Length: 135
Image (cartoon, rainbow, N blue to C red; front, side, top):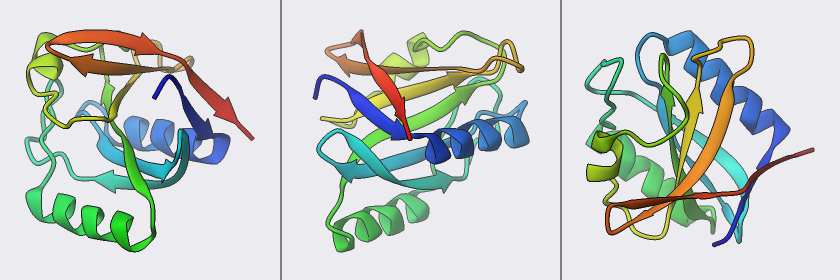
């Protein structure tokens, strides 16, 4: 997958969740078809941390079932960086264990101008990929 398309209403939901949960990292899953996101699944950060996130396993299982039942595919795992840039931390890279997904990071470093970026992380090497916000 070379890029990711996120509808504007889902982009807005990601930003809103990140702001509401700050200073804790917000997290969730984006599902869709091909490279276009169709559904957002907001998740709970079990660690309640401002520099780390861990999804609740029971929520992950339910979301996986919902995605399959809807005929969609998990396209991305997203999380926020309340106080740092939209790039993977060493911890993000170390914990990037889900194959074939894009890791989306939204930075609230400048809260009035949130920055959202996507990465493919393979063999501990993050590669930024284009993320397009669509109507």
